[in-house]
Length: 212
Image 1 (cartoon, helix red, strand yellow):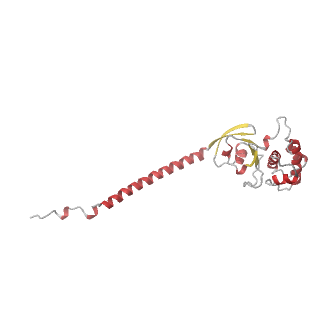
Image 2 (cartoon, rainbow, N blue to C red):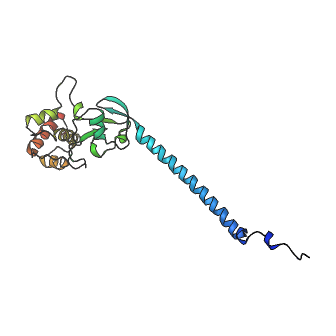
Image 3 (cartoon, rainbow, N blue to C red):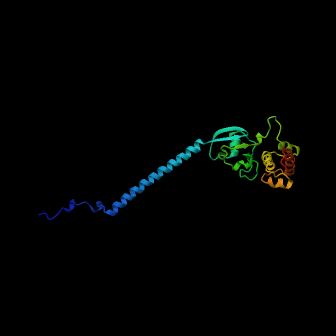
């Protein structure tokens, strides 16, 4: 006579799932799904960044009066853009840390060190370099001529940056005295030590430019 169910027909204890185990299993699956989703989003973001890095970013800038439209790597400096992409090698790469002034250019009329200026910051702006100073009739800018007159250079490596900074110094109204010129030209180094000639040249050009 049978008194109850055959014990062998009952499921093993290991296969029994209580409420706590069920909830934990559901949470684990949900967490795994969320991790996958986050991973996919991160991968898509990285793909987008790679696409920008590979293809570059559009840039429109006016350089020496000419409109330039090109695509650049987001990491490109204004100095590298000018020298390597536009063939304007007047601005020099001296220290590449913004400490020597050899790379000085004008952006919207103000002097900047182009080695520390991201090229993308030039979007829609006006850039002037040493190559753009010559006048349509072929004559030199008064500052260029003054540098020649006062022998304000030796090796010439820093000269383009010195001239661009000197023009800005005059336009800013800081060329009224040798002391003031020295102060406002202190960011431009001359390893040859032609400082006396540089100061004299700026004083002469300031009179020619009418903004001493």
